[in-house]
Image (tube, rainbow, N blue to C red; front, side, top):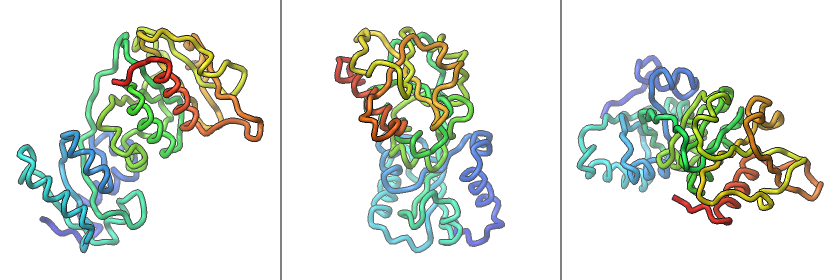
Length: 269
């Protein structure tokens, strides 16, 4: 295991760029996933791991158990580089303060954009909050959605904060970034449905083909769905509220829409 104590170290400087700049992460083709739960999820999904970064002095029993699992994994034992970072350096990379003390460097997978899919898809149209983006990815995976597509201007799907909010769902679903609205029609066999704040029927009032794939579009906080994306929607839905609040958080609205789809008969993968 290599110890790193200086922020002038080239490897640390690269990790710092990846952690703080989505463009740098895409250019390098790697992401940083922090925490015990994400490490467990990566192991369970047999995700390739390039490197393990540990905070010096980490005493978390679950971290040591995870390292044993990596050692015992026949596919990865002895092949993953390990680094021990000074606490101050580690905290500059971690998306939360006082995390568990383990970070994984993962290759960002290249997944082919679906063509005329029969499965359900989700399109994130300019959602900028990483917590919302990660929560929707997690909900989509739980509801049996096959792919999540993201428009330009959406929070980077493989950023540390989105990964943390996704809680391992990234390893179970197809993810695609920088997908323009003009590309959506070719991705899906069924209809696209736009979730709007008002002026549309509730999700449970919409009759959908149980066997066809459908696409769900969720717009950015405040601005909602762009005119270009809304133009391809055959249907629109909104979640009715009591009037005490104007609208729901986009991640909450997405959960209602997607699990209403499950309730009405769309089978979870």
